[in-house]
Image (cartoon, rainbow, N blue to C red; front, top):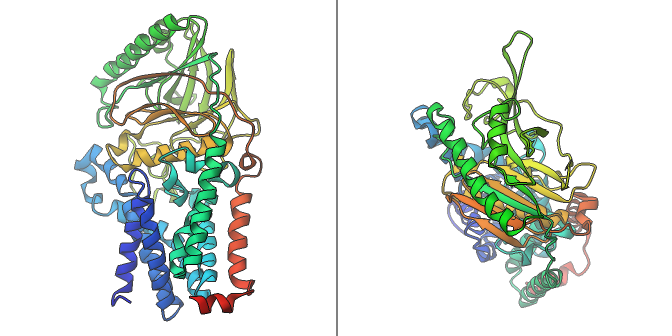
Length: 503
């Protein structure tokens, strides 16, 4: 074993992040996870195991969330001092969740019981990370498969956490040093991919009733709120809308058209600004509505600004306001200050916290299938994207301009794709600077606008699929299997001795 196990654990954690989007070097886990189990097996006591877990988690999340540093470049003169510490600092609380699997693996006997203990505890830690301190379920190991719809299909049964469990189990099998276990891994992987191929065997037919126009304005974050840029930005969105809308209407004059702008696309407060809405109505094609991200404000009786919201509004053909949805799951330090503002780090321009909305809802507009809006990172929470009433599609509007040309937008896209498979619902994702995309209810990409591109994407709204098992039971399913793995590692002793002798 290495003379510096903590340093080795740090490196193994960082190398494991190469399996995440956009690299998707999934085979690296066949090396890093068994090697990490080896370090844990050699740890002399629980304290040493916890140090190894913290090191592995820290390395994993530093590389997995390095992109947060890009947000500082929008105002480097103000935030330069945070550049070297932003990603390492964020990785510290995230690394704490690696203590549970490290301790569970250290406390389990070597062999398959250690693999089960580590796999079950890893998934339970992922699930805890999604809820504690408002939750941050980013870069779950199940997302390593989001390069294609094929390997994502079991998420319809067990969700992304179930994919994480399968991934960790298979990746750790080389630690057992037996061809039998390797053969089992091959069989599991073949069954996994076979299930995916079976679910994807039949293509979903296009309904050809609702035509979507996704508008990607590609506005850099450092320009977005400059006063002299507001009108040009608005005019850019109007021009792109008019051009794409005219072509869509000429091709399909009887289709209902839904134009979608990303999060905070409008530099004007559309809920209050009738003049801006009239300009939008003039740019819309006939029989069309606009769904647009915008900031919304409330003023008090004294005329002072009382509350601000990160919102999605619907604008009708006559410029009327059709609906308003306010984001519920706000971003700490970006949209509100946690801990009563004890840490003075606010990345969004303005001195007021955003006010949260009511949470997932299903919105129905005349002639448009009901949809559930998800603003920005609301889409990363598995099992929390649909309200009491099941919609016909999911809409994610976001502004990933904060994170430039980094891994962040690709990782965000992977989460959106997984929500489509989990819920059995089409996912329409519109991003300020990309990546905008349309996925059907099985996660197949039907259209895409790349990162850093300016333009529009036109596609038919895909049909809804039957509700999935995960959409019924949610996180209970992966939580159940993770607990089974953990309990089996502790109490199931059958054939343990013979397995140890084989290894």
